[in-house]
Length: 550
DNA sequence: CACTGATGCGCG
DNA sequence: AAAGCGCGCATCAGTG
Image 1 (cartoon, rainbow, N blue to C red):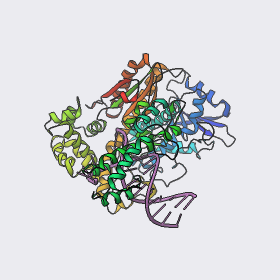
Image 2 (image 1 turned 90 degrees about the vertical axis):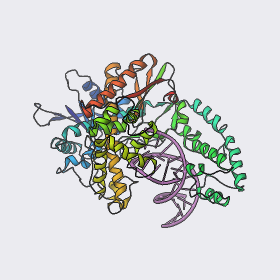
Image 3 (image 1 turned 135 degrees about the vertical axis):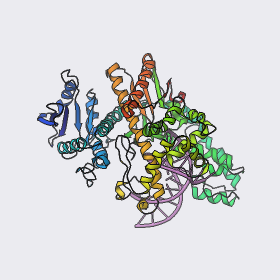
Image 4 (image 1 turned 180 degrees about the horizontal axis):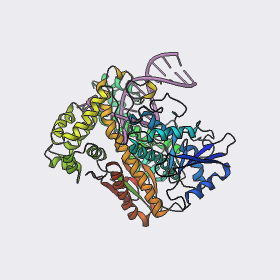
């Protein structure tokens, strides 16, 4: 059963019910009823808990952040939804919808970013307007999916993507438990006490003085790359850039204090007191998650840099008293995804335990470090250096896996598109600039075909890994709900980082939660690869703070 | 003064 | 010191 919500201009809501009269029949709209805005949450709650609705309702709406926060405010959790905006993006680009009107449709009102929360008033307030014609859009999407030869994948992908949208809203509302005290102590230990505005922290001044003295440049501002580069070269240190790697190659009294300074400056600027003031309130860090924000299907975040939390500050992620963090990380996810995609039996065998050790045992390379480097090189398209040198050795031992990424690369080089297991399709290099990820070389269609080949090569693996992660998270979410419900102090997700999940749980439940997380990973593997011989082991840690994991 | 691109570095 | 993918953010420098 699908229940479509459409906001009317008077602020109330039209609720349309869709069912299949019998399992083989087309989905049909059974009728629309008016729900007063003030009664919506109660209607949703009643429907969600109606035992007669055996299959469980799937709420269809234009854009999850426009609906779900207010439902949660009213204490109403939703099990499943269809986020039409996210699904539109997937289906419009999918190769498997070729021939359907949605496929490659001109950009329109559905090709927009998710509604942004307005920071000023309520934390979760969003604009009341809605995207135009959700019922017609829903009909288009259903017909695109049901007519597709890739139907099973697209059904799963759109469901997983939509569940991700629910999780993103739920995680933001829960927030990551964050101890401002621990963070402040950590900054103070590294940089000295918090300075007054406009001042450099005391713990950076000695480094700065040393740098200036060693370069004979008493007024140098090392934060200016141009200025620093001039000073370094004037001091006889011939570098083309001021990056850490290039600096490390030189012997000079300035190098050590300069690297120290840069490290501290980075911490100060990216995750210092200003960040703390801006992003941590009432003991929680609430990043803006952007599901589907990356072309490959990975999530992005906007503001707060949540996906780049440096290890140096993770000790500030502290469980509340009486609680633990369950931190789970999918080990060697992308190579395992490649194993499943390619059906490479030798690689599956190598992945029975630690995959990189298994590659060493296969005889392809001598050390675990080499195995990792070779694997990354294969998935990213390395052609030179240590990594590029090792790739051919991998190819001899794992020909099927290598053939898959090579084929993806060649397709890209020739201007074609590639798709993930479930059907997310790469942008066409011939597409207009507004279709491409911002960092992609614009002139790719004509010139840098090798770079585009590396992109499509990686797209297949990274994108399918993102699908696995969404399925993992979705499976975990429903298992958590089935076991603990959503009332009161129950285990819940607080952070998602591509192949890693963090949950905040009552201490007594921690071990059981850890087991459920593992079951969910196995379920994700089955959803994507059936009974194919590929494993998705996790590293799970039950800890008091995030820095204790791994 | 506002914007844009380049740089460097954090994460997977 | 970039080779080899995907991001976000702060800062600086140059432009309009």
